[in-house]
Image (cartoon, rainbow, N blue to C red; front, side):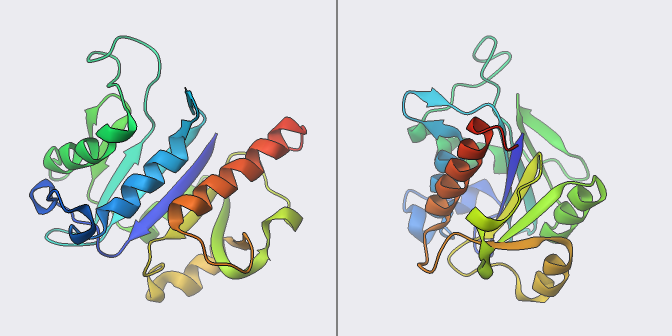
Length: 204
């Protein structure tokens, strides 16, 4: 199992803040593309990924959306069918289904709660997970040993929260995917490919 944590400073924290213009809805479009890059393959769907979306935009930050879509069972009972065109709808519905004070499973495999970015990272660190932060100044990911069940952390177009960066780098291994700057969704696709190749080679 691999996990991604995507942080957005601007993504809205209420469903009614998402309009048809996704770019003007706190750049929720970046989160949607990140979901697609995390789970979708050509004519297939990954079942070895969990994605954490950490939204810090208005009106009620922070919100933690945890996605591990079920691929087995009956649609509407054990799972909801997720297609690329549905992703925005799912995120909007998740935000609408937030319940104060609880981690609420809004649909099978989709949870929402009020929890901060650093708190999520700390919890995974306490579990002994192998944490990696995407950083242009980090070590080349192709030269870094990746442990089992890795967690990769990345930010939106504005980057990760500045106040937490020093603490994050103390808990995580900074890794880079190269000298060029990629979109968040492209970064996830590249990391997925790197982990896939290592699994295929028996290195994980």
